[in-house]
Amino acid sequence: MPLYNSPVSQNVKYLFIDGGCLDSLLETLSNGLFGKTQLEIDYLRLASDYQKVFYYDCLPAQKQGENEVDYQNRIKPKIKLFNHLKSLNRFHVYEGTARFRDKRRGQEQKEVDIMIAVDMLTHSFRKNMDEATLLTNDLDFKPLIDALVQNGMYVSLWYSKGKTNYELVDAADSRQVLTIHTVWGWLTENFQKQVTLPVLSQSSFSPIDNSWTQVNKIEQAAYEVFIYEKEKNYAAVLQTINGDYNLYQHNNLDQLKFYVDHIYSPDIIRKDII
Image (cartoon, rainbow, N blue to C red; front, side):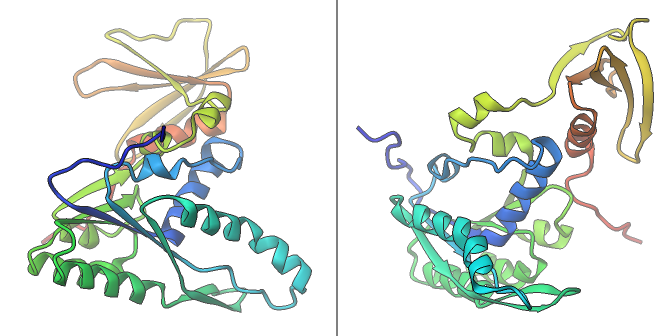
């Protein structure tokens, strides 16, 4: 019996994934919250609401001076991922090309953006789908979203928190910011059991007593947080707009700070309009 049934929906929904964007999101969360441990994603969970999923990426380019053995070892995880996605029902993988320009500019992708644009426009023109979801942070896709919306297609955008231009977000019919809580729902059950997130407790009065020592205070435009320590455990306390307190506890100070900033920082940065 399959673990996941085919999605049942009145609307036909296709998901288009910019693999480079998804990789960057997962790497950021891994570095900030899980000590650089590679996240184990259950891609069927990620795409449970979609009839078809199109994944676009390219193998890393060979760096200048990198020998063939080292290069082949470096690209093995990516090849393994591509093969895994190709084995899943409803998933289709399309590979572009990449080249390594120099140390300053790094790797440059070729063809991926064009493939996404062509496929989304083609499926929209042929009326194969009723709704298209695009996972990306790339502002270059705004003209594509504009064209799809003007053609009558309902377009949803999945984007990384704090890394996406507001013009891209505003262009879509609906949008979903991808936070750690979103990604947590994509993780395998086994991986979820191996890692922990800060634990939240809420109170109408200050939850900190004299047994805690304040070690830091962080003031940002969007939030203010007090950091406390007790017996190598850490607590972050924020006061809500209604006067209540949110307290987050974790045994790793850096991960706790990252989590608080990740949750409370703005989803997108908007320029003041004069």
